Length: 43
Image 1 (cartoon, rainbow, N blue to C red):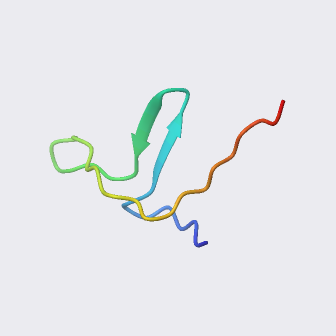
Image 2: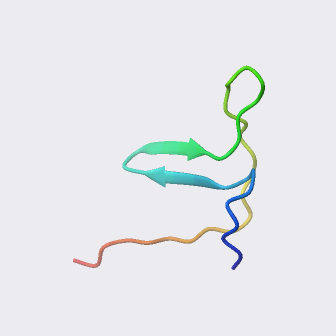
């Protein structure tokens, strides 16, 4: 899996999504993501 951090990269943590690209107006550009890396705590 290539974790290059390009324009379609996004992060979802604690109920909030952060997207890797914004347009000229500063609005986030939401792109579909075809692969994910899931990390969770095993308790």
